[in-house]
Length: 444
Image 1 (tube, one colour):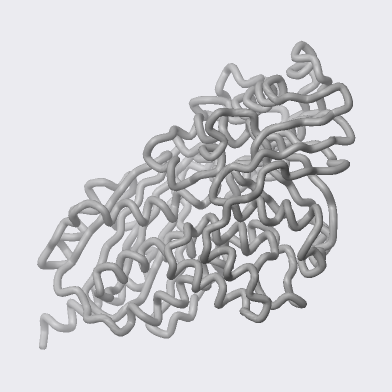
Image 2 (spheres, rainbow, N blue to C red):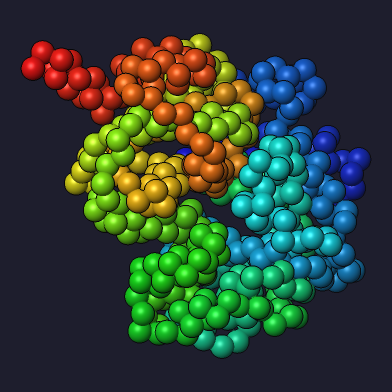
């Protein structure tokens, strides 16, 4: 899901930037004209939308600073490092835009490193970092991946797989301008400009296992993903390699839009872990894990039994998606032992599921899983689903609460939720099934 594209049509002088601001609405539950009018009346100062900070101006100012910092010569040549960052668009598929992130900073790796962000960076800082990446773009067909085992584009592909930042030089057709997008899957994007040519100056530094998988032209992409993961390669590196079209049989390789790649990699790894978790014994008590980050509160309830998984997303009133609606919106999805998902899913479902399955695998146990994600007003600008995955991973690092009954476990969860526990029970299919089974057992 996307909150839409917010385009800033600007001149290069800072004085004209804010005066030429054109705002498109990013909420999707009210008419566009209402939000455009609201933003014009507010101008980021009066907080009419109810957000603590104006996400438009926050990202806009970060982009302005990025343009002022980057070294751009008179003929529009920029020099910097890619963290590495490679983003593949999806519009117009199979002909898509490709963005290579470039930043002038002493620590470029931080600009695309979700594992280092979690728990350390605020929402504002993450937005500022990502909005500061300059994104030269080119347009090409996704099939270019199977044709580029050498040459300039192959260097860009390999740079995206590097474990260290890579110095890069790009000649732009014109100066970069801010195109700022709020997106539910991908971390925020910064200023962009059409690319004439790009040159990778450093030699990319690839992990040995990554290099081996990339050079195996007879290995299927799915197997490549599983090998990289089993060897401890970061999932974010795997996603970049997969999206860059560096995996799979050589004649079938193609670029994969980043949004699709994120969900595809999560889904493939979930399928792999589910098969293993199903063979483990069940937990023998009710376990509860919880964590809060970026205005998102998570509760994970593990119930003794065979593996099944349910996610309840509770969007509180006046959040970035619910707008002026005064009641919480609950989105529910679940799967049973067979692994068949019963509702339409998005990337957040797989991201959370992967984090939970990783921890069940480390515990060598299976369980019936009830996952609750409560989204508050502090989460006023989506910054990608990486924080969902990382939150699920991190909450298992601390000791769980143990209970002898489901009633006690639910009572503990209810104390931390902003909504009543009855809303959770009313919308949860798996939880209602367990509660019914408990009542039957009492009369046997």
